[in-house]
Length: 163
Image 1 (cartoon, one colour):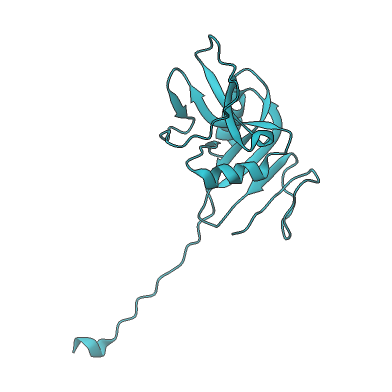
Image 2 (image 1 turned 135 degrees about the vertical axis):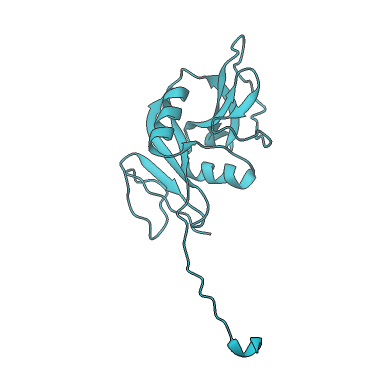
């Protein structure tokens, strides 16, 4: 398992990783897994969604604990960041994938009378999620497809087998 962190900031960095675009940190487990990118620019949830869709694929969807830990490794200790979670009034992920895994903060969620709320992860709270008003400006985590390795398969035919 490889951890690649690309950042203009001097934060947790793995050996062998290089700096990429300013204000971004990246994580990729293998060539076939999606790449996660922390964008340090603070935007509203819909602004973050637009940025991710224009530059990557979408805001990150979290399907299991391992993916949640990947995100925790990107987000600075004292920060909260937008993830692709959205409620209006049902829960869904920005990319349309089904909601099945949750890592909720047991503390108070300031939902009140808001019907449209958006999900954040807080590393300060062990990566647990909560809802905030979608109008707050926060850094965010996007994903892009992993690079796929294409290999050519040669077909060997042993003519002696046929005859």
